[in-house]
Length: 514
Image 1 (tube, rainbow, N blue to C red):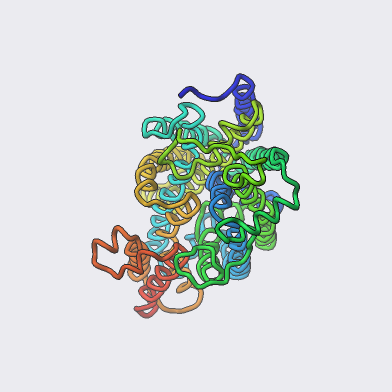
Image 2: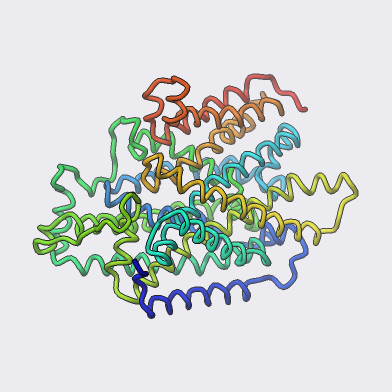
């Protein structure tokens, strides 16, 4: 099958690339010889800009493609997950951000050096790097699906490899020279593009349905299978449901604490403000702004449900989903983009997918590089004679290249993992993050709320959290002969178990600085 793109679509994509190249050049600092300037934008980022940058980092291709996929399959309960986000944000704003600013941290793991030792700091930084390779690589894979469908009209392994390489290369080029300042300023453009593309798609979908708004709302509230697709809160206690309220309040709040308080990728943006109050305000603004954005993407999925599965609202005949990408479980939205949207709008929406992917990936590259340089390379270099600041900026650029190669490798691996796991898009993207977050949360809770723990227990806790989450995977738990129910737990409950295990392990020994 040839690509469905028209000349107008390619023109729109070309304009998008031109805008990003121009933005990358214009926003590039002319002199970046200081690591604080390179990794924290000189501490000059206002709250509103930090909030948009956090949104760009967290609302990735997983949201752009996965939000509609979730709405198509389910209801609005994913939005209720932001209750957990609010709980987590309040915790991070009160307990963590002030401490990071008090020690003038460049990376969040420097707090563990003061509490335990440099060895503990490096262990946490290493776990972050592993987790970010997992999460970042998975998101690159999800974006590569869209790119491959556009370029090759397929989602075969060869197309995914080429598409993932292109996404990684674009993200690397946009952040290579200017560091975090360049990333944040480019995030503003990326955010405007993918949000504009989503709103344009929502409007087109809504006007393409011949039924009235009242009829659409009534039909969604009374679907043929008896499900209310307008449901916002699911109060059931079903451990297999990731967005039921018990899982949201306990598990997703932990996920948000981890992503904004222990994950350098997101927290780095909050450390780039002039003071802790501004950084905390940026975090809270990002949580509030997430709700309407996610609402747009879930609503797109609900309308896709109408145009593909509700003939009574479509004049008696729905669109055909087709079998072009049979076996690819997450291509509903991309299938609609490529087969139903008019020329020009198709290119704009595809550019939105690219924008979501690149905004997430370039931030991950910069964050991973900052940890590699500040927590690993700088201490080693200073012990062997030291170097000037420009040397460490150059090392940061090489660190981004290394991180990019690792994320690309995991993106390719994700192609096989996601197909084997039978996980929907959002659950797959979020679950891979849980592996590293469980141990990090256990370590930070120990550091904040106890006087126990040691360098050795930190390392043991990080490993224990990772292993505990791994044992909750059905293919691992089954092989080990663990109870079957363990493999059926949704990822928020897996995070709860992993965090509990890691916290207990970290607190076993009394306080002792190694």
